[in-house]
Structures are given as C-alpha cells and as structure tokens.
Image (cartoon, rainbow, N blue to C red; front, side, top):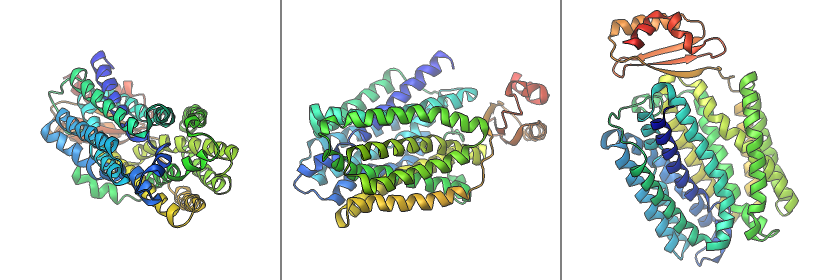
Length: 455
C-alpha cells in the first residue's frame, strides 16, 4: 500500500475504533451503575445495553447506500453527529429511559458501511483485501481495549463521564475525517465492499450463509447477555474498580491464542473443525457459569474459556462468509452478516435482562448454553468451506466480446474457481486457490488479461 492509502486506512480505522470504543466501554460497568437509577429494572438494563444494536442493524445498510448518492464524508459526518448527540443525551440523563434513548441515538449513527465504502474508494483493487483486514483488526482491538478501559474510566469519571468521553472520541473522529482522510473524487459502487440490493434475495436464501448469519447472531446474543448479569456477580466478589484486572489478562490470553490457532486452521484447512470446537468451548463456558457465577476463580476461568472461543469465532466467521459467497456478492453478504451481528447484540441485551428479571442469573446462562447446543448442531452439519480467496482485477474499459474471451481464458487456469466480469465497472471478480495459483503469474497463463492490464 502506498503512503496515501495507508494514511486513509489508518485514519478510517481510527474513526471506526473510536466510535466502537464508545459503544463498548459501558458493557462491563453499566449493569452495576444502573442499580443506582430510580427507574431501574433488569429488563430495562438489558435494553439500555443492547438497544444500540437495533438502530445500528436497522440503519447501517441504508447509510451505506446513501453514501453512494450523497457522498461518503457527508454521511459519515452525519453519523458521527448523531453519535455525539446520543452520547450527550445519555451523559445528562438521570433515568434509565433517558439513557436508552441516548444509546439508540448512538447506534443510529451507523457509519460502518459508509466507512468501508470510502476505504474501497481510496485503495487500489489489489490492495483492497489488506485495507479491509486493517479495518477488521481495528474493530477487534477497539473491543478489547474498551472492555479493559471501561472499569478504569468508571473508577475515575463514572458512567456519565464515560458517555462524555465517547462524545469527545466521536468529535476526534470528525477531525480525523476532515483533516486526514483524503477526498475520494471518484466514488462508485464496490461489490466486494458494499451491499447491492439486487443481490439480497440470492444471499438471504443461501443455506450455508444463513447458518453463518445465524451463528453471528447467536454469538452476539451470548456476548451481550453475559454483560447484562455477570458484572453484578463479579461485583459481589471483587470491587468494580478492580474489574479491569480480570478483563485485561483474560482478553490478552484470548488474543494471543486466537492468531496462531486461526493461522494453523487456515494453513492446514481445518477451519470447520476449529469452528465447531470453539462453539463447544463457548457452551462449556455458559455451562460453567451456571454453577460458578458466584465464585471469583470460577468466573475468571469461564471468562477465559468464553473469550478465547469468542475471539476464534469472531475472527473465523467473516473468513467463512468470504469463502462461501460468490466473489461479486461479498459486499452484500458482509452487509447482511453485520446486520445480524448487531441485531444479536440487541436481542442479547433485551433477552438477558428479561430472563434475569423474570427468572434468575442462572437462567440467563442456561438459555445461553441451550443456544450453543443448537449452534453446535448447525455448525457440525454445515458443508466444509472451499479454501478460496477473493481477488479483484481492474480491467478498465472492456466490451462484451473481450469480457467473454477473458472469462473463458481465466476459468481454464488451474486454481481459478470462479470468474465474473462486470463490464460496467471494468473489473473482474475471481475466486482462486492460492495453493495452486500464483496471482503474479496469472498474466502469463492468460495473455489476454496481461494485454488488458497493460492497456
């Protein structure tokens, strides 16, 4: 990646990370703080924690589509302004209902799709995969940092202070957007990074993609439900100001384990096996928390298992989606996947709070354990993924005859599994097996492509 691309991607990653940190920092502390509010109830606590997911899921695809029409920076700016306003509403509210409204406003600033589209505008096709990987890493890092920072900031400035801090982070994101991110003068649709409405039916009716979308929905139901009840159990064993001492080592170990395990699973082509085992570990953690949620050692042990499994699943699910979906539908598949992810956060918060209010803490974990059994069965019976990578070639202007010639030429090359040429966009979307095909040698194997790229 050249210097302009790196500058743009790191700035966009900073914008995504600061916004997500603002959403996640209250997760480990809010259930405890909410007990001091006059209108508190477990159901409303869960709703306050998860409501951002509902507005995010509802608006993120429309925001991305609107950015094609009205410009990326304009839509991202509007989203960040909504986030700032929501943070201020939550910070100044003295009731749980006021905070719920603020959290819903935070989620309505659904800029993820527009940020990904802008990243695609500002990077060359051959660097797109790296750019998206950097953005994905920033999201994971922001979550881990937020869970550790939340208890620390709560100790110093309290939950209202955390909401003020998130407003400042969003303002910093606006500064980055307008002072560091270059203007994309040629914004257009990128099928590998943006949803295409005409592809929704195809993606939504694919049984393998449905399993993965249901999987990420369940994963975030479990994650959010845990934060509805576990901070209270942990507070009975350890002063809330020291909760970061639990989350820091747990998340650090989970992060250290995830990278080598994912790399080994990809290299040896055992991704499905690792995926199913991780779901089993998730269920083990939920089962353990039923009996050990009132024991500090038990909580730490189960959290270690839970977040190790969570990290493995969070990293492998997008990879599985990318392997299964047709290359020209990747942006649509990832948009629907992200919608399911955020809707899962909403259901986890609301459902976890309702179960806590009407039944017990143990019931929250018992239902979580049941959901992992369902997911385990679905994952164990899914097809093994094809170990194919997506590639995007910029062809420039091309007519229908040469597009057909190029398609027939490329599909005969060993290691090329799929070829789709979009004439209007002047690009070719490929699915290739990197163990068989060296992309740098593709021009030699298909001379027509070399001639097109030179022209």
